[in-house]
Length: 489
Image (cartoon, rainbow, N blue to C red; front, side, top):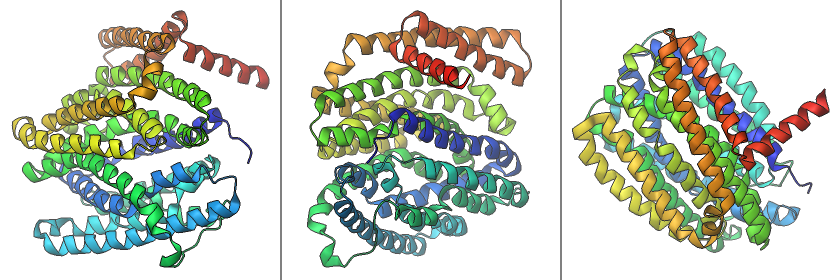
């Protein structure tokens, strides 16, 4: 198989994430002004609730499939057998998820007001399974899913402006969200057959004994992650109100837009790292991992500082005046981006490829329990601000625990002269962003112009500082841009 460029893959996956970023940037300002805060609360609570059952249906299959399938991708017979077995397990877990969802809707009476919205979001369960995006990740092929994302996002935006017209149209918004996110997954399943032969197999041919243990360990880890990520919204809804959920979900929405964009650039390295460590090519593995950490440092720090400095402007532009109470919670939760991104590297790029999923599970379970406890303490005191604080503490804890579990692998890289220099230059560059945003706040009264100049000048000053301080990652990026421009012009 032709080796894919990590740079090209990062660009394509980054482009797909930019599309996922642009979609809410276009839709959310419109929807947040059309729908009521309570309507947004119902929408977000229902989406979060269905997320638990998507997790059950997923069963950790995607992560496991990428890790194991990367070893077989050059053997068409083995990868087809493996993919069919894993897909069959995934279908079974999807059926279980739907059964549990229906039972929960029958048993819990306080969910009756959310039934319609929950049922719409539940379509994601089936279509996520059919999407089999893990096949595209195994083969490091992001072109197809990027193209279809463009098409479905454009259609969804058109549908949004046609169908969502008043405060009670949150069900239409839910349906359009599902269409935008997983509407094309049936096409994914059909197209995936160009890589592998994938089909349902008989239970006796599924090889449950071999696959199930690592899948369940990864699932338990993902479940714990979901508990400490999604329990915030669930507990806030139970202890406070739909209004509080609507305010907090605005902070999370903005935070997620930025953090997803950063993590997407790194996601493309996971199958490559899994392949390198699986084939015991440790020197190459360390090189790629070092580049990942270096890239992370120059992306995460400015994103966090910029979001904190422009939190009021961002909330006003994206959501409007009625969501201004979310500004403080956005400033708090922004710090979680640093911890969650490093935790992602330690977990997905080190522990999972190194088959240390049991340590990942332990770390996540500890964090989940503490985070739930923190939510019950902090939400009654500070409502949505308390929820944001609990998320920051949880992300810091899981980052520390995952880093400690991977210390034998990451310590030489983290404490290398190159990494320390890259991180320090990023911190100094971020100080430049603080100065620029402060000056722009003094210099411009216009919300739009203040935001535009803050972003543009921050990018320029940050890049200039990195180059002056000889940040290796930034210089390599600059060289690549020069080569591309030279080749075209």
